[in-house]
Length: 183
Length: 139
Image 1 (tube, rainbow over the protein chains, first blue to last red):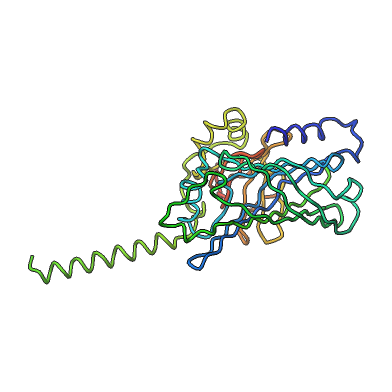
Image 2 (cartoon, chains in turn orange, blue; image 1 turned 120 degrees about the vertical axis):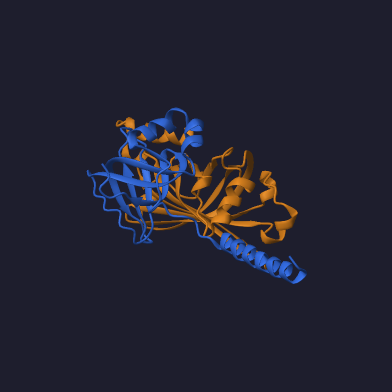
């Protein structure tokens, strides 16, 4: 999160930076995940992810509060935070990496661009490399980046008791949708 | 108590336990509307608390109904009918962000002094309050 702060502060507080060099940012990124098993489907969404994308270097970061994920059922939300993600100990999940396949100029030019995202995902105190393809759709002053990838809970030391293991998918689908605007 | 009465009481007790268990299992995530606040503060004080000592602020405010008063910085309608109201904190980057469900009457306009309450979810450049409601006629 400190890197996001530094990027945001630099863009806002250094007016000599040319407009084309200012990064793109979002504070309304949407991260959702879906787990499907024959016993139960589990869905949750967080609509307040923060992200910064520097199209010149390709550097991209995002940060999301674990307690910000919303479930339909209170018990699911409670188990997610207290038993699985231990959000009191690990309050945030972050991603730091690079998004390639789109230039700074293209980020403000209407169109649809295929991108690749690669970097380190940190969750529950564990950092793992992830990579996925994505799409950036530019309309007006907003460039919306979307991507889907999967995570295995056990890869991030998330222990799921045997008695409920059948209720949670072995691979969880994560969808990311981040509307960027130039700072 | 004879055997028949004991069985009757046992059946009733099990039925009650099942109903209560089913209710607990199916219960929706609670909204802040109508609840008494666990903590009452200003937007500036709340932001300062998280910005200066996040761990202490997490312990004090997270998962609690926090009633916060302040000046509205922005009101942002979201695509799905929800509204995000951001309160001024005196910080150029961060604010207190209050999420309102679709159809909720937040009654906020930029520049107005308001009192809102919601469940605190922590700090991520902004302090996040979710499932918020407006507190009318708060002094």
